[in-house]
Length: 89
Image (cartoon, rainbow, N blue to C red; front, side):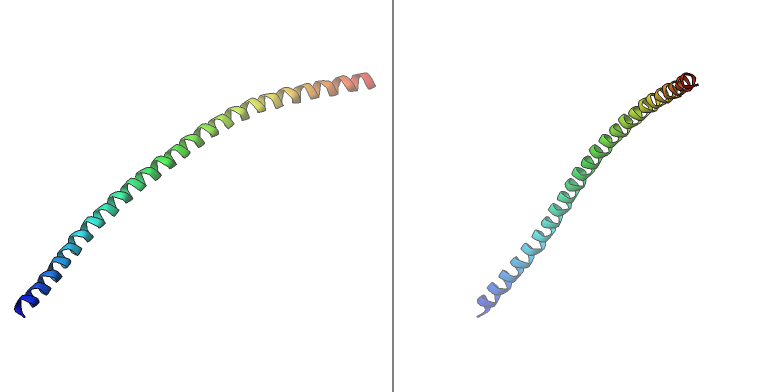
């Protein structure tokens, strides 16, 4: 009877110790995976931001070029209107 109780107590103690150390190991693995996921997410957003910065720079360059074209066309339009007024008078 004593050996049966001792065996049951030993099994419970072993299971409790295994559960405790497994839980700790599992928590460390989860924390490590969270760090890896955060690093991956950070790199993903860093790439997106870099791409957006490049696109904004390209758009600003195109905008400046378009403003020059608009100014040139506006000047040509005004000149053509002046010529049209001269020819109609």
